[in-house]
Amino acid sequence: MILHRSIKLIFCIALAYSTLALAPSGAMGNVLDSPGIDIAVLPVVNDTPIEVWENKYYPLDVFDQKVTEEFVTLLMEYPYARVVTLTKEEEPYWLKGGAPNTDIGIKLHFYKLKMTDRKHLGSDRMGYVALRMEIFDGVTRQLTYSSSIAGEDRRFTFSPGDGRIFYLTHQPESGKLLFLRPLDLLPVNKMFPRGLDFWQLFPDLKDDEQPMRKPLWDSFRRTPYWNAFKKALRKSRDALFDGISGYKMIGRIISPTKDELKKHLPKRRRYIISLGMVEGVREGDLLKVMRSDRYDTVDPERPVVILPSEGGTVKVLKVQSHEAIVEVVKEDKDEPIKLKDLVVMPLYIDHK
Image (tube, rainbow, N blue to C red; front, side, top):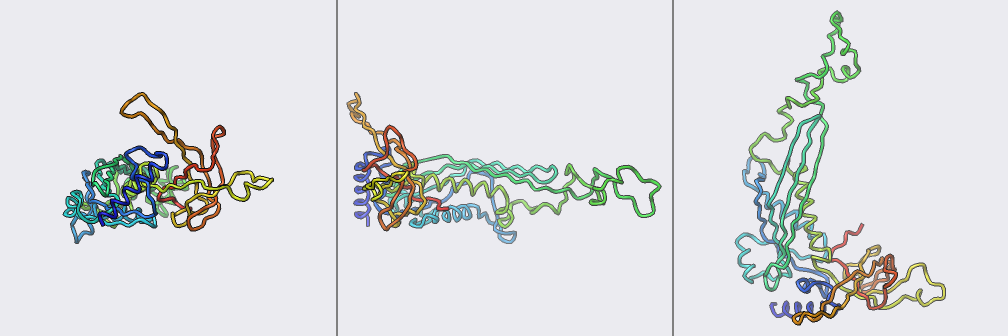
């Protein structure tokens, strides 16, 4: 198994060099030769004060478990992902090179959390969370990439109050009109006979979802605080699969279509690329076309530098098993897209 992964790593590095060094040297192993990636999710580190109980009869913090489950669900949206979660006991063994063998390992470190709950004409809640995502190489088990990511969510719920302090007066009782005051004639008084607590000076205790020391999962998962965590987790998944900091498939423009050989050319040029349905391409996807520029330097330790540049964008029209027909939707007029240009496809595309 280890020999197989070593061969796979060597092939990936060779493929990366053969694609004119599209990515920086630290990301060479991110180019995959076939769809599918094995991911080890390491235990979450939570340095924020948040603790979430399963229920009032089970006072145990389940925050790490819920965050891990949500992140694994997001990773599984990529159909070729194979995910395994590690326990705290398994983590040091994996970092030293032990089983299971995976392509990468991911660790999430939550280091900042802000939660506010203001009462004014209702409830105004805001949650902000920041985390650091660390990616480890599956062969060397060394840290290869790290990024700070934040998520934020806010929700306002209008509530007119509980009627214990009145901005408007009571409706006069039936038959007692001798003490009628002008405010009593307002239509809003008939709609709210008990009055309105506009300023929420005395919130009703029954409005507190949970008058306990620690939040319960059933109520916490419906708050904007949990939505802030979910947004940060989704950004982390996207940062892994965006084709820049994450893994990607590389194809080429290998041939023009028959339309390009006709006398009356279509409005947009069409080509065949070497990526298809098996690699995860779908009709309507927008893929980047890349090429690289070579520079001869005066540095004896680095005589040649190759810098990637974006050549344009193509849209997928038709898909076969390992090929697809694309049309050019964006390109540089001075350096148009041409045969042998490279096509970069992120591992995960949100097909809408």
